[in-house]
Length: 208
Image (cartoon, rainbow, N blue to C red):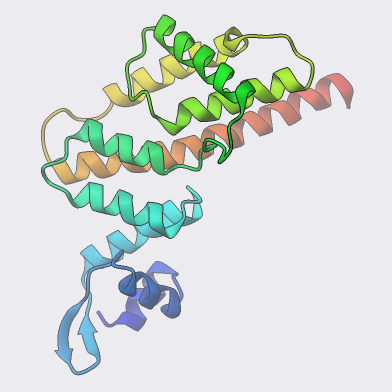
């Protein structure tokens, strides 16, 4: 198919497709003439993946590029590829200047993760996100430790165990990796949306 057809089928504007091509997020088509190329169903699939990461995951282009590279890296394990996807999601980054409150909260969070028995990178941005949340609660007058997140941790444990167990252990590596990455991005967005909808529902029941 020509690039115009690729645009029509994907719903992605032509200038955006050309931008993705320049950024290396989409492989070049098969050249058929000067300034002309043919694109395949694989291009359409990859374009849909990129669009999902950008529009649903709200990932910046630099993060999308890192995720796409991890998916295409055949030597990278599924666990490490998932780590790339997790780190690409918008996290709270450490401040540029020293913040004693955040450092204390991060230490509390690290001990909390250890008590939960969860393994994982000690430098994960998710730890900083949790620490930022804890600092915010404390600065708003709540005298609490990370145990305030216990309910969320229990549900997160159940969700994560089910999601990872649903991935095929054997078979098409590319498909498994893509399913894991897309699941991470899409279902994280869905979880946030469902929580907001549920809160609106229960708020209307109690206060409406």
